Length: 110
Length: 115
Image 1 (cartoon, each protein chain N blue to C red):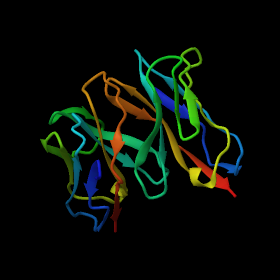
Image 2 (image 1 turned 90 degrees about the vertical axis):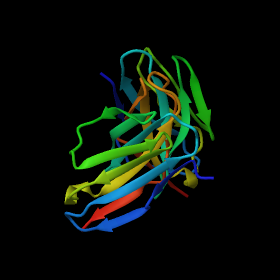
Image 3 (image 1 turned 180 degrees about the vertical axis):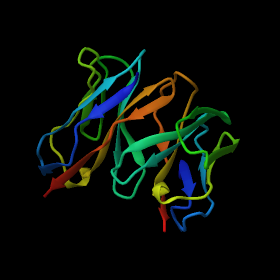
């Protein structure tokens, strides 16, 4: 079957620290992988995506690489800002059905 | 212009009432979804429609009934509301049918509180 597992939060970091949020998946076929971000009181916004193995998605300083051998899609950012504080969701899309991880809350302190 | 808009943004009502949430997308997408997000932020798909046809119907009480008058609209009607229905409901849309795996675009959510 299809599923997504991501690290539990909350994750608390100081500004300019390095961020990693782990995400692993199980899937049949050839899924696409996504990271979404949800700011307080808002809906989810697509942050980045990768559609095939070894693709790297990137946006706003965030990156994630589709690793088929480790079935992972870890989110990274070299230097976080207070404005990055939000909930981050890893997601898998397969045959137009989406599977979301449980979300990881990130708190960035000045 | 808002891509996926849902109304109302907040809905406070009493147990046992019937309520509807409306969703419209102006992106020209073929597929629309309803999700329920609980207090722990866990996101669960409820329904998916592709070109006005139901393609995904997860295990959801039959008090919840989606209606899609056209492919730009997917409304959610809830009968006999219960305390456990309190959550944030998100509408989303994406382009393409089965297998396309295009990203979803989300509305801002409807915060439903049952008294």
